[in-house]
Length: 218
Image (cartoon, rainbow, N blue to C red; front, side, top):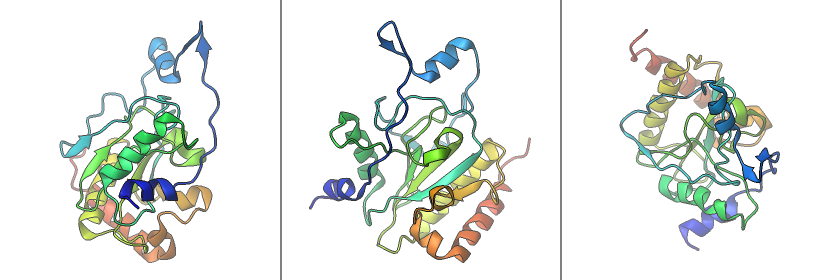
């Protein structure tokens, strides 16, 4: 079985979202409507760090609907659930969903890879299909891992800390209360290692809080 097939096999179906507004036979996303109204989107104008590679998904119903984030009230951490797969493979899986053949809704704003590389899949002005009831007000990060335990490699962990701290600094979030696990939203065992080992999760939050102190204060 190829890596891509393994990614596809393990993903679960997501609930179909509400149908978007159609005017005059042209489907306008809510993001466009907000832009026309003059309202500023939560992540508008934010530049990601230079070492984050933009690999944006094409706008489509299944993985990048183009709907705006209402607010940014938190960061949700996930694990990909596919041991030893790369950030690129998981990004390409999200892109493959655009065909609708699987009937699956899934994506994330960022993916952190096994070597600490970071891909951005969704702009910070738009929702990702990652965190169920919290899609509309959070930024989601999927994280790659080498084996079934779900524990992140040191290179991956360190880059995740840096990325999460940057998001907390940029959007004025408290890393100890507004960085959460997918588990904290739905009870799903995700990210697995950090659900099964709550002390490790608490260390991650503490490391992220410490990292935010390295950023310039306004």
